[in-house]
Length: 204
Image (cartoon, rainbow, N blue to C red; front, side, top):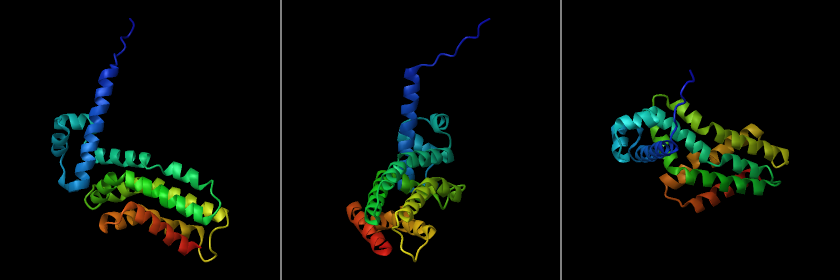
């Protein structure tokens, strides 16, 4: 007897994907506004206009939702494109300018997700692991940029590649952007120019 194949409805799959995306948008907004610890699955359900059961079925519990937010933010950050641009450049000035602009675009575009992650760290079930997942690819991208600066002979003798990678993280990592823009009210344009100039002065 031939086994009957399960019918998959494209319309139903599309609707499920739209519901999942809506839930995640509402969750990231609530986490960014109130903080991870002050948001419940019921809150997310109300914001999305669905039941709590639908939230669990579509995206899982709060920890699962935060993991999805992190994965989506990393994917959408544009770090791979930024690195590919950097690797084509041959001067410290052009590399640092590209890093300032590329990391600005990633942080600006994913600002709400970054706020959600930042506010979750003190109360998350495993904040250290969450931060590692959120920043590992970002750190690797800046380490690649530091390696490239060394390859093109653009590193000062006083700093190793590892030290320059750490300084790039200081200047162009998410904390630097958040300090200037979120905490001190700088515009993204002003922050980009200041971080670029600071890095350029220090390394050249």
